[in-house]
Amino acid sequence: MLFDQMLSSHIGRLGGGIAEQFGLWHIAISLLTIGFIALIVDYAYMLYMRSKLPPGPFPWPVVGNTFMLPDNKPWIWFEELSKAYDAQLITVWIGRNPTIWINDAWAASELFEKRAGIYSSRPRMLVFAELGAGQENLLNMYTTTPEQRDRWRVHRKLIHYGVGIQSVRRYRTFQNNESRLVAYDLLKAPEDYVKHFERYATSVVSIVAFGRRVESWNDPIITEVIAMMHLAADLNVPGKKFPMLMETFPFLARFPNEIAPWKYGLGKKRAFHFFYALADEAVKKEGHEDSFANYLFSERPKYNLREVEISSLTGNLFGAGSDTSSSTLITFILACCAFPEALRPAWEELDRVVGPHRSPSWEDENELPYVKAFVKEVLRWRSVAIIGGQPHAPTQDDYYKGWLIPKGAWIQGNIWAIHHNEREFPDPDRFNPHRFLPGHPDNRPFPGEKGYMTFGWGRRVCSGQALAEQGTWITVARILWAFNIQKKMGADGNPIEVDIFSYT
Image 1: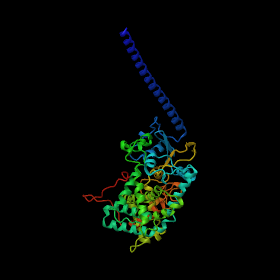
Image 2 (image 1 turned 135 degrees about the horizontal axis):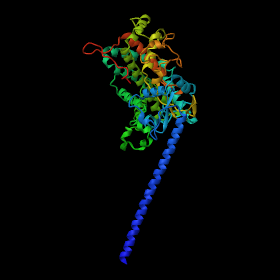
Image 3 (image 1 turned 180 degrees about the vertical axis):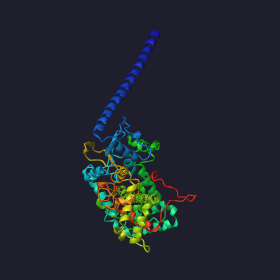
Image 4 (image 1 turned 60 degrees about the vertical axis):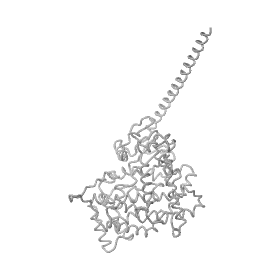
């Protein structure tokens, strides 16, 4: 009797265990089935959207085209896709999100300029914005609601006071002086030309922002700013490696930094503390009353500016005019070495207009059309913001040539492809200032009066454009007037060739 009861109890427990295991297995199968169905439905939606969007490579479920992205220079791949599909716009899926790339100047002008009211907002940028510069930064602000547009206009108004077209003319004196110092530094140590350009560009912006000169390359503000700008550039290029892979798999950004090495420490907002400390210091020092930081603090009560906003506004000046200007001058040196034939017309013009007894001044600009064209070609030939800076996002569904551009989608101009289109720029990798001289056979129609799109478009055009163009012109003109820039000589006495395609 006792044995029978024990056996029955054991069989009952065994049966219950089997039933429990079967129940768990059934739940697992159900969850997998639901997940599979959800995957199929989501992928079907992706394919449906693909049929409406501009053409592009076939996306995989969940990951899209992420792992098709090249390891280096994806802008060239986007250009090649545009040619392969014979389309001005192409679609590349970053995970489940379509990103649209404009590879044609006229299409970029039509959408970003003529329809600027639609394309003035930003998409969600997890890595660059939420984990990087912040969504409250002027660069990344949404403009989809009236409140967001109002705040964006406040920031834009404030930044225009600092570096707008009318404002930068009052900076000509110290910009000219800093440019003279560049020439002197090049005379003393030509091998350190990169450091000289970085000091010059950072000093100009630092004077505007904080009333503070940068006297030598060893100033900590240079190393901090250049490091931040290089990081920002890296975080603005789509990729299949971390940290950019988080754009494909956003859930990975939810992990704390301590257990998420793939986040590379993003989210700490180091720049916030750095730029606010400099702004606060500038306000407390005498003699800095004309600085942008001082202006922001004076306007703080009126616009209810928070510390993070003051920090981002001063920091944006460096993004708009520091690393960008120094990089443009480095490009200028490369062009002079690679295409020495472009120098002789500049020398002849400078000798005729300026002469040997003084260096160029602002008053000479309109009398030096070839030098002006030289600067434009520097900005075109190897543009700094090679993928057009930050992406735009339409505030409503839009259509271009029958293609859908969905509300909130990531849409970006590929400056490389735009500036290397044979239709507008024959033999595009050749440095040729004549293409910017009216009446010359190489001068081709191009949307906009400037003839290039280096600084972006519409209401999101680079705030520091006027400051960068002004400083680049006087510095390039002075260096062309003062120096003969040549390739470095090897031990055998022959010039060392430069590779214009290895430079980014």
